[in-house]
Image (cartoon, rainbow over all chains, first blue to last red; front, side, top):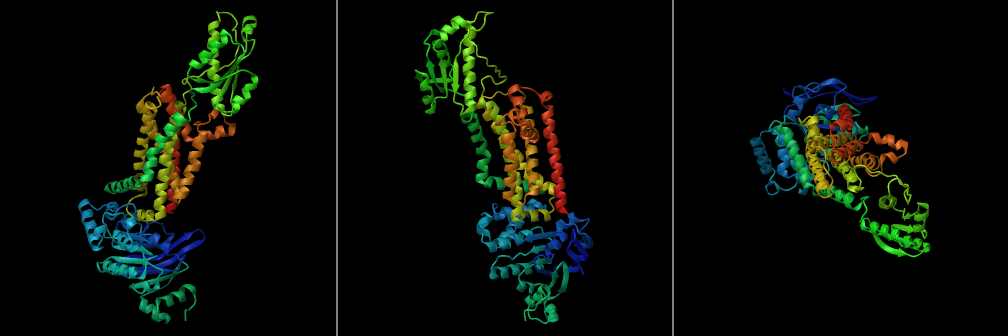
Length: 244
Length: 369
């Protein structure tokens, strides 16, 4: 199987503190992979290493076959990234945001125009295409940010708590977009605090204190721990307590 | 390269859409030049004076008419006794009182020397010093005319002052180079550090770092628009200074522009350095204002002469970039000298830029871990 992400004993130390401790996992191309863990469990450090922003202390990892130590430039070209803060420029219009992000990934002019039109049409943003992003409702910004992260057709997109601060209906709509992208073959690597969202993933991993404590499909995980929700699994692993 | 231009284009959108910043960018130099050039000038015109003439002689009348026709002084009040002096000052309208003692003419005739008293309101010390200097000059030139060669001067007022390059004590000559240094620092250092910190704050910096843009591309993309704007600003101040305030341009314009570019480059480097340390716009702003603007105003010789500072401050003033730039601008515009006299200052500015950029690059590298 084609591996989108593959790590082997990937470790990052800051002085004496071990932020991620020998994490080993594979993510298949086209998979929706949930990367869960409490705050401070080491999720962000792991993502930063996978995106080429942080050099690992030891261990190895490849992204779409590229090595995280030596091939960071190639990695940057094949990944997309979206954070909780949506990362759009509020003082630019919808169209300008799309064209800017396409532009820094080196898309040619005609392609930029086509992409902008396509995204605006898909998201039904026709009426506000030339309005400043600052004037859009949060849910629209979120979907636009996701489309922008995909503007250069990356093989893998990293979503760092992409649904923070959004209402449940908007979150549901956002997950529809994630499924569509996954169906087109994009690998989704997503972190989240919402355990109901964990249920939408093909497989999830749960990090506790820098280590991966569990990695499986949500169904298998619930069965193994004898609980009926991902929230139950998370409580047992992350807090060492059961909700029951 | 197209990626880089996409980035620069975005920066221009930011700048052009932020009306307030744009207003500051181009309004500030205007206001500063006008303020420092006209309102806050050391130059004095039509200062109100009072005269206490107890002699009523030809000499005193001659001197009074010369003082009043010089353009520096305007007669506010004729006093009739020493007692009237204090109230005249208290009312605050009179800046200086000229006193001719009762036996003035007699003293001139018999002793070959006499006294004229100049009393100045020293609550405005700079004005006081200037006024007494003007008056002393006028009186001395009158006494010199009375004096046939070889004789003792009839009136002795030992004031030694000689002003080179700026004999009329034009305030604008002193202030405009300082304003230029200040505005360029403000626009370049403050604006770049704030715009970079803003990207960190809104989270867009993360996305830029994950993108194929290199750090150097991001930094240059941030800096390039401000380099252009600052240079435009510098040109604007030069034009205002020459045409509005009548500052001469005795040296080479090309050299002046080249030195301006060098100084802007240095200011932008400082902006980048600040932004590698500051994570929020607020921190960036305060850092810029505190470590750049305040020392520039107080220690560069812009407002207070470096020579009259206490020794420790004089030493500190050596690390203030604006000090060298002000010296360069004065040198080129007013003294009309070339690089053969200014190479030292130029070298210091270039050295500072190199050093600061080296530190910034190191900071960036450690950030990457």
